[in-house]
Length: 302
Image (tube, rainbow, N blue to C red; front, side):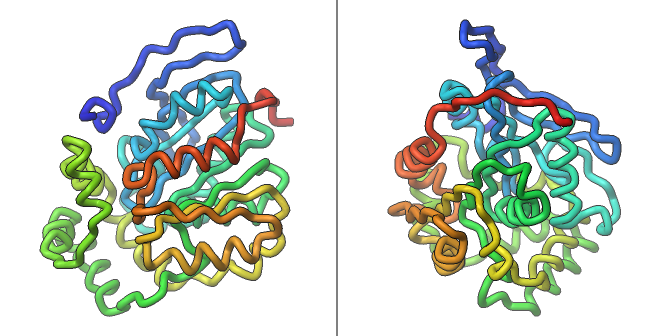
């Protein structure tokens, strides 16, 4: 499992289907920033996978080739401030709006007029911003363990401490404090036991993030306006996924599924905040059933 978590690139090979299979790591200069991404299935139907806060493109590494085999051109980028992508030093460079702008610029660079969009956690918040701003660009939407506003029961004093520590001490100190927590997470522990190297990889990806991004997004996600009412205007087919043990996000997922017309809700048994690792078969089968085999190809941006 370690090679997947280390994002080992797999050489792409042409197939007879008109698109390319085989996960690769690509780089995209968007002007303001350069984003690095996992990519496979070039020429297939566009599918963008967006990771969450302190996540990385490798959060989807085990899924990219399988989705490409269904006929999708899959792109999973590191957001700015994360992983291998550029990391501006100033906090003003980060926000849901900035992330969304980067992703729209990326899809335009890829030549995608429209695309399917999956967002995990903070990535799901970015996906909401995108579909609300440019609904004609999003064909189908997957919201995965995410929220429509401020996550409930946030301790604003702890948020303020986290922001100050990010600014003055860095993310390693914050991680050491988080590791001292006695909060039980059985789904995460199961994933660590089943996947050699998973714990170390999970811890390391936070340390590869920008401290300025961390501080900026802690502030924004603790103060942001609620989007639930606005989500009632979404008219694209939508799948809402959540792990049954992800207590902070189950209620929000139920509310989003009830608000977005026709949305499907899938609760993954024994999964927590990262069901692609903790409840893999349930997560994968529901995603593949929702997306189905791709029936279209990318079209150029006008």
